[in-house]
Length: 256
Image (cartoon, rainbow, N blue to C red):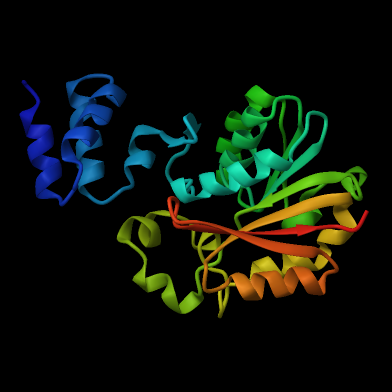
């Protein structure tokens, strides 16, 4: 193989899956010179997904790039939970959507939903527009519910949220790929990690349709507090966990 140097460079940089990453970089490169640029970026610590321009999420290729949060595989568990509750024609909103992977995956699993995705970050929304377009998704920019069209109030059947939930003091402990290459606004959940989640829960009942559901990804440790925020907002609550995905989702349901 002519490009043994690619694997060697990635191994020297500490990439555990050097052979697999080398194949992805070769596929993404336009030519030999471009390959060297991509390898240098990856060896320099950039997330592989930023370098190649996409992330795999629930079998789909999601556009992603520099300055955007990379969808985590554990969030596929939230999609599994959401897909059970979604129905064709239902209004589905991906709040704090980032690149829109969560909403796009739900729409892919349940064709025919009315998809909306919202975030405050214009960089992330540039990718979200590409990711939700195949599903007729609508993208909105703004701070949480302020981004949403008023006509969605009381109509949302499924509100899926992967808000930042890392406590501020734990940000320096994150892998270098996250803390140096992803926006802090997509990571930092405030002093206890739940600041954004509480804001989402506080207004959820006014936006959900009767019997509508709010699903929030959180950690096992934080889930009781996430559940408490939903209960305080008048939602009936249950929690779901997956050992396979190392993931926890709290589900709140509005009264009918």
